[in-house]
Image (cartoon, rainbow, N blue to C red):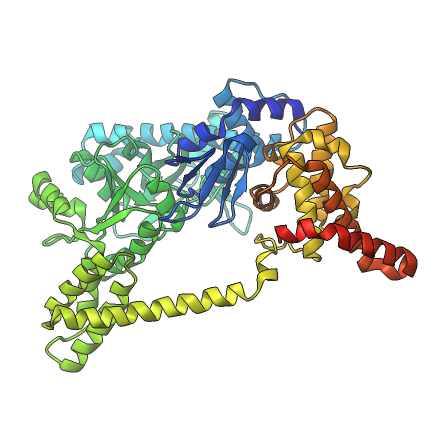
Amino acid sequence: MPLPERFLDELIARTDIVDLVSETVRLTKKGNSYWGCCPFHSEKTPSFHVVPDRQMYKCFGCGKGGGVINYVMELENLPFRDAVAVLAKRAGMAVPETAGGGAGMRERREKILEINKAAARTFHSWLHAPEGARGLEYLLGRGLSRGTLTRFGLGFAPDRWDGLIAEMARQGYDKRDLLDAGLAVSNKDGRIYDRFRNRVIFPIIDVRGNVIGFGGRVMDDGTPKYLNSPDTPVYNKSRNVFALNIAKTSKAGRVILTEGYMDTISLHQAGFDSAVASLGTALTEEHGQLLARYFKQAVIAYDGDGAGVAAAQRAIPLLEKAGLKVRVLRMQGAKDPDEFIKAYGREAFARLLDQSENQVDYRLGQIQKKFDLTDDAQKVAFLQEAAQLISSLPSAVEREIYGGHAAQTAGVTAQTMKLEVDRAFRDRLRREKRRQERRDMAPATQLQPRARGLRYDNIRSARAEEGLIRLLILDPGLAGQMGDITGAEFSSPLLGRAFDQLRRRAGEGLSTHLAALAQEFTSQEMDHLAQVAAQPESAANGARAIGDYIAVIRGEALLRGGGERGDDLLRAAQKKYQQKKAYVEEKL
C-alpha cells in the first residue's frame, strides 16, 4: 500500500533541500539557486544545481535529478521507503504504518543490521575466549594493542562449520537469517554452514555506525588470504571503505589510502587517524566520490610491488575526477605501511607522508621506468608518452612545470619539451572539437531523453508536453485553465503519466513539486522529469502558453493520424496549429 500523499507532502515541506544537500556537498549560492560538485559522479567544475523554490536538484553532468527523497535514495543506495524513513527520522516525524509495498524490504534491511551487530559482538567475545586464543595471539603478534582490538571491534571465528549458526540460533536467529546477511553459505546439496571459519574477523562499519559486513583473514598461508562478506541489501563493497566511520572525523585534511585492513589499523594505532582501505576490490568511482565528501587530498600508500604500483596508477584518475588532490607515497625498505612503521617508527612515516610525490611526478616516474634513456630512440618515445600525459593537465602553468621536469629527466631543453607538449595539447583539443561538432550536428538527438530506455517519438509534441508539466510545477492554479486535455493525448507515455499525476494533485490541493512524484516514478524517470523541470519557463503568460502548447500537442496528433479523421478536419487543425506553433518554436 502506498504511503499517504499528505504525509509525503508534509515530509517534503519539512525537509529543506539546501540544508539536506549541504550535509554532503559544498554549495555556492548564485541568484536564487545553488551550485556544487555532484555527489553522484566525479567532476571538478560544478554542474549540480539545487533549486530551493522548486524543492529539486538536477545534475547537468550525469543527469541525476529529483527531490529530497530521490536524493537520499541515490546517496545512500536505499529503496523508496527506507529513504522516507531516513528523512522522517531527520524531521522528527513517524512513518505511517502501511501493509505490503516496501515495508518488507525495510524490515529485511533492519533485520540484517541487527544480525550483523549481534554477530560482531559474538566474534569479539570469541577472540577473548579460550577458543579464540590463536586469533588473539596472532593479532597481538602483529603489534596491535588490546585497546586497538576493542576500538575496531576485531574478533575471531572458530574452526567449526556451525559455530556462528549455533550461537545465533541461541540468540533467536535461524539459518535463513544468516544466509540473508551473508554470514552463512549454502552448498549445492543444500547444506548451510558458516562463511567465516578459523579466521580473525574485521567488522565493516558504515559512516552511520552500522555493522554492514565482515572481512576474515587467515592466520597462516592458507587461501584465500582474505574472505569478505558478499553484497547484501546493506553492504556493497564498491560503495563503502573500511574505517571511514573513524577517519571521517580526522582533522588531518588528507585521507591515506591503503590496500588492507592491517595497514589501516596499524596506521590508526600509530596516530594516523585518516587511514582507510577499499574492501577486497579495486578503487571505484563511487569510492572516490565517497572520500571527496570528507577530504580534499588523498595520499596513496599502496604496497611497493608491481601490483601496488598498478593499483595506484588506476586509482589516481578516479580520485582526481572526484576532485581530490592526489599524492603518492614511495616507501623504501618496507613493502607496506604496517611493515614500515614497525621498522622505522611513527616519525619516519610522518616525514614520508610530507615528502609524498604529487601524482604527475609519480606517473612520469612510472613512464620513465619503461625506457632506457641512454638510447636516443627510447628517449624520444619517453618524451612523447610524457607529453601525452602532461597535455591532459588543465592548467598551462602545470603543463610548463611538469614539461620542465620531463625535459630535465631526459636531458633536453624545456623549450623543446614545451613544443612537444603544445602539439599534443592541440591534438587533444582538435579531437574534442570534432566530438563536439558531431554532437552539435544532431540537435534532434540532443533533445531526446538522456535516460536509457526513454525516447520521444515526436520531439515537437514532447517539448510542448514538457511545457505543460513545467507550468503545473510552477503554478498549480493553472490546472483549471488546461481544459479537457489529458495525458492520454501526449506522445510520450512518461510525460502523460506525469501530467495526469500533477493535475490530479493540483485539483486535490496537494503539492505539485517534482519531489511529490517520487513514490510513483522510478529513479530513471525522475532523472528525466528533473531535466524537464529544470528548463526555463514562466508562468506570467501562462494562459497563452497553455493554449499554444495544447495546440501543438493536438496538431501533432492529427498529423500522425490524419487519414482516420478526414481531410477537412486535418486541414483546419493544421492551419490552427501553424498559427500557434511560433511560441513553442522559440523553446526548441
